[in-house]
Image (cartoon, rainbow, N blue to C red; front, side, top):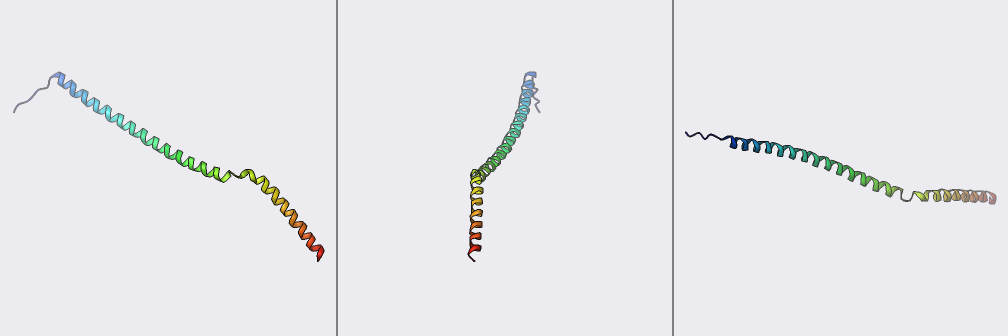
Length: 90
């Protein structure tokens, strides 16, 4: 059986490769955590955007409410005039 002894230079290279692998794994883990966080934020923004569009659709004609109230008041007054006129004819 032949035992191959490593020189100190070879040992240093193996240590360097091992440290590089550990660093690469840590960087990968951090980037994966960042990717997941960005995905969650993106999903939240998409939901918020859709909700905002729905609110905008529901409120796009709210400026007409003032005119609706005025026309409703006029209609109620007209109905009352017709009611009173109908009582006078009976």
